[in-house]
Length: 210
Image 1 (cartoon, rainbow, N blue to C red):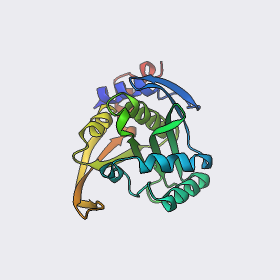
Image 2: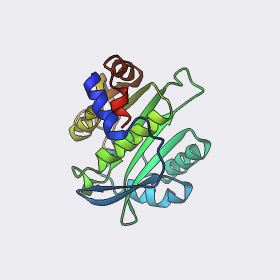
Image 3: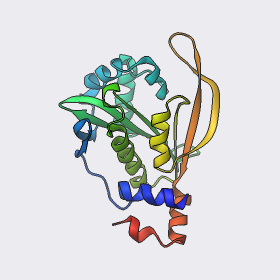
Image 4: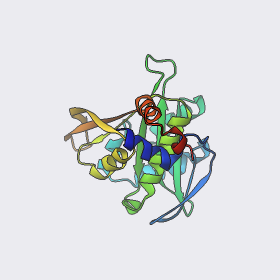
């Protein structure tokens, strides 16, 4: 576990405060990663409408619905969530969101939600976006993270496992798609505080910060 956390830390640089936009090179081309703003509502709605229906099950709400996008923007304005967009040639091709509630009983816990366009899958966009969202969580001082997806979304699960996430729960028949079919959800968790403590025990923090 300590080794996984160390590798994840090297990739995203735990010590760095993130500034945006950032530019990354992927197999899908040059990608700009930037913070989502209210002005992006229409572009993100178009992105959501272009996703396969099954991919929308990544998220607790259907982002292809205008009313959902409007509520999402309001939550960004309130500071409840922070969303990053992956943009290629002016078009949104991915979105990563960090959700946290400082007024709940779990102010130390954040949830990551992420989805990318079908045409950039397997080309490094999802990995870059997940690393940036993970870095946001580290910068926010969160101690634990969770992410959920349907059990058949193996590529996405692998991306988060590479960041040190591990399966914590299986929720059977937890979501129902537009055709009425139910799907199991796997919940992955990352105990950041524990990993950092283990790295300190192994004398690794200095290496992680450079």
